[in-house]
Image (tube, rainbow, N blue to C red):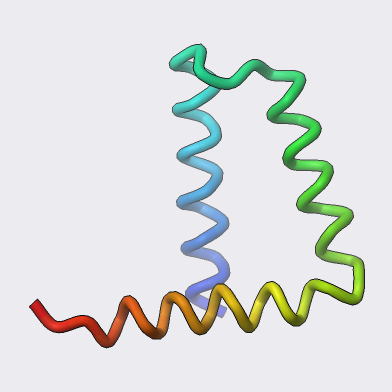
Length: 64
């Protein structure tokens, strides 16, 4: 749960920075957000969630 909220917050911040920096216009940003919203309600959502969780677990195991 904490990871999901943190990831959503991080992606939201990146989206705002890209829009304010002029790299990403508002139209494509809205389309991207809507795509993610509707993708979350498909049958692919659990697979995507497992993939992101696996990547974050792998990153968390890296020792510096």
